[in-house]
Image (cartoon, rainbow over all chains, first blue to last red; front, side):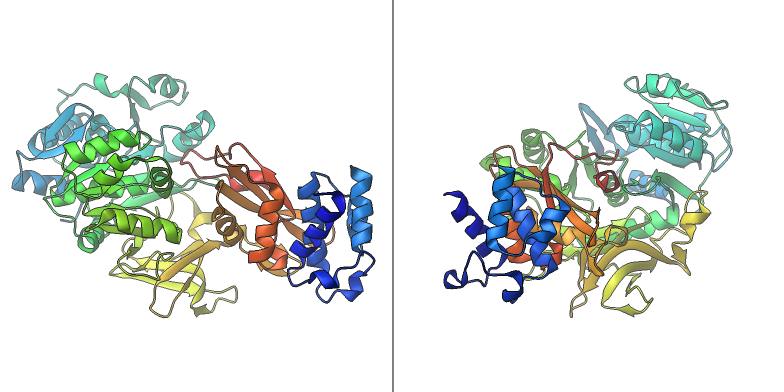
Length: 77
Length: 480
């Protein structure tokens, strides 16, 4: 599985009701119906545990789309 | 029977030549046990009544004789765990203020290091048993029989003085509910420095049964042989041993277990699959558990004889009242468990601060639980463990139970750690089984699927082992 597929998988795991057709790399946090602060935390935890990385608090709270999460992960690998 | 020493006296009268105790290669009839106890107690009786005698022993006939001799001399048996650290050993001795410490060759050097005046220290084999005290003593029901210190997973250990009448009440309840009787052969591999093991021993003595004492439960094959060779009828094991047996045992042990009329375990919510497995294994026997604290022994009992109640710790024991109190002090079906009854201690040992937890006879246990519509009690966690995440109250034990149901997980502990945004978040420590290849991300994903979002751990850390107390409990506070 490549990096992009891994990040997509994280999104589908963090948002179990998200359908494949609804996924968009540039879709923003406000457009997800259930991307609240705890979902943000779950997303970051999943990313950190999957790639064995540690995101800073600033990085964690600045991520508002799948694309931004992907870029952030890339910067740690 | 009003005091613990009556248990022995009564069984001697009824069954003098019956085997009371099997330990290592030693066997004692009730008469022989009584003679040893009397002889030994003549030395202890030189101390004033209600003096404390500290005992540091592994499970053995010597411990049982020393313990009963202490009670026979109307003294208080302060029972020390053998795995106690030097620091806690000294703390307990300073608090208990014994007149005498009795131990074995194995531990005498640890005892000799204690620099306290006016304490006699003895290797059990060197006590002058021909010492003769003419005073005939009988303890009173309200006298303290034994003193155990609680494990102190979150606080400094507290001394719990249990009276003879507390113990007699509890022993009668155990006997009645679990049908212990004189025909029983009870296998006991639990430490006698713990309320569970000690209660099993009292019950065997009370009923005039035979007790087969093991040092521990680590050798499953040995236990299996012991059940067969002694034609045992009951076995007591902690939940960790039950899990180990299911994982590691061969048909031989399972076959041995199938002969039992009773398998008893203690104070925890068991996983449904464990209960179901043991119900199958036991065939015609009962699988049971109880809920209690050293301060309020055997407050509920659960015999797993029907489906759907596998996670319950049962119904209140006869004569024991239970109420569930919420944070606003209202009583209902959910909240902190409070217990009142003759099994509950009146106060702690020289500890006015801890005594505040006993109000009008009600012991505030610090355990959280709920009752179902049939009155069955379920444990959910500890009051002091609750994590406040942005105003949401999280019981860490719920997360732990959920993650433990995953294959490849041996033990987990969830704690709250500081977080700049949420105040606290959950950090989960995980000990994997030796063959487990589970990944952290799989655990997080499982939590997302099965828990509310705020309960999902923000950090998962694998550990090789957890810090534990002398009683084997995990020191949760050290992980926070």
